[in-house]
Length: 76
Image (tube, rainbow, N blue to C red; front, side, top):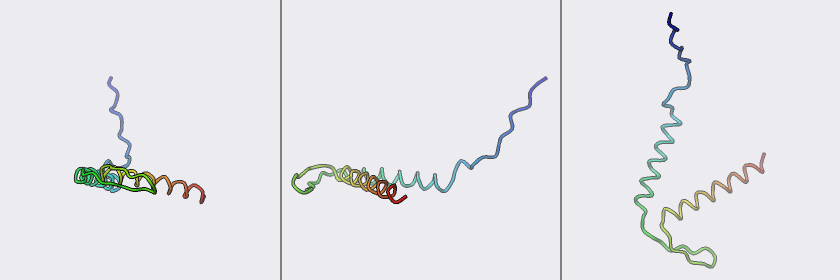
């Protein structure tokens, strides 16, 4: 006597618009970082720092997300 195969429950589809958008954003970010490999000088108040453009943009992005999360948390 054999057991019947487990039934597959209908779940969310594997490919969703949200996942496709996420993959596209990651791909664009990788291409952007690969294209912006030159170094640049950045002055913030007093110090002058020489860094890659992609790293400066990444730091700005992270700080922006942190500030947005902080203000969104206070608003609730």
